[in-house]
Structure formats: C-alpha cells, structure tokens
Image 1: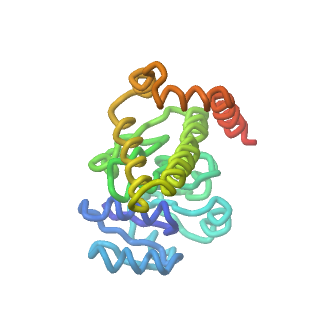
Image 2 (image 1 turned 90 degrees about the vertical axis):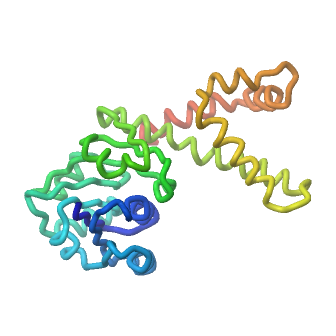
Image 3 (image 1 turned 120 degrees about the vertical axis):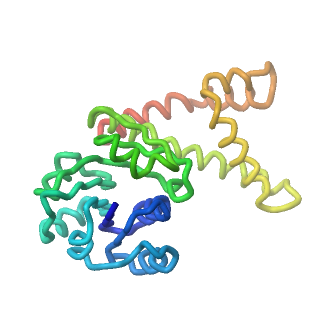
Length: 243
C-alpha cells in the first residue's frame, strides 16, 4: 500500500516501525523532525514530506495527531474521495474525525500501543477489521469492537496498564535495595508478569497462585483489604463517564 502518516509522535512512530518492511511505501509528515529523520534513515521505504504532499502520495492515511491540532491543521489540507483514513486520535470520535477528512472515507479508529513497534501487541479498533488485519495483523492482534460505547469502555479498561507498570516499578525499586546486581530485579518482575498473564486467563492464574498462606495470596489479600478492587473499578467508571 501507499501509506501516509500525518503526525509522528510516539505512537505514530511506533506504528511505522511496526509496519515498515511489510512491502508498503510510507511517507511521513515532517512535523517531528527527530522522529521522521530517524525513520527515513532506518527504512528505505520511508520518506518525509510536507503535510499536503503526504496526502498527495498516499492511498491510506494514518492520523497520528492530537485532536486539537487536527482541528486546526486538517481543514487546510485537501483529501481525495478515494482515500481511506485510519485515525489514532484519542479524544476524537469516529464521526468527528470523519468530518475532518471529508471527502475521504474514515475507515477506522484505532488505538495502538507502543509495543506495536516490535510486534506481538494488541491493536484496539473500531471499523474496517479486514483492512486493519491486512495492515497490522501479520505481527499484531487486532481486537475489533462494535460500537463507540464499547470502544470507550475498552479505553477505560486499558488504562490498567499504567497502574500495573507502577506496581512493577514499585516492587522493582523495593527489590533494588536488596539485590546484588542493580536492575535485574525489575527485569525479572516484568518477565514474570508478562509471561504468566500471556497464556493464562487472570482468574485461573489467581487460583493457581492462591496457595493458603503463600506469598501471592497474602499480598493480594493485603491489597484487596486496602480497597484495590473498589479503587480500580471506581477509577474505570469515572473514566467511562469522562471524569
């Protein structure tokens, strides 16, 4: 495909890393010079152009902009009727993004994560699942939702990633004061959490780690008694309400 990328922040840059080498011709906007220069230097199939030139050279367009930037920038550009657009813009609904790219067709709203750069990452999407599978499915897993309400719920729930990372960081820092080689402890904890959750449903893993009086049971009960479950559910409810 001829793919254009408007905006090259952290996520859009990760997406380019994740699809470069799959046979596409990719042109990225020159908005973030450091990121675009690196992409063009690393991949022969990636080039850099101004915003309108990105559109002129593309059949599929990725929107990797902040919503407030898009509202100012996109009306100044000319999209084609035959173009297919995929939005990565948090804070912009499908209908809002579609209005900004007319007469092009907004095919999907996608929420990629930084891990897409290396592959093996979930890709949360609302829209044309077939197109998204064609672009991202070779290296990542597309999780297609059916409505904007479902997408909003998934976005609220995926925010668990940051608290989990904070827990691992806290445990790693606690371990760092007690380990012989600095940094190994957090690497062990990241490996432990990722590998065990990868292939086992959470409820089954909790039960497997529920040995009476065991370390895992005791720490989990300690945190549950402190309100961990209620705090997490309350936080996701608030996010879903837009608070």
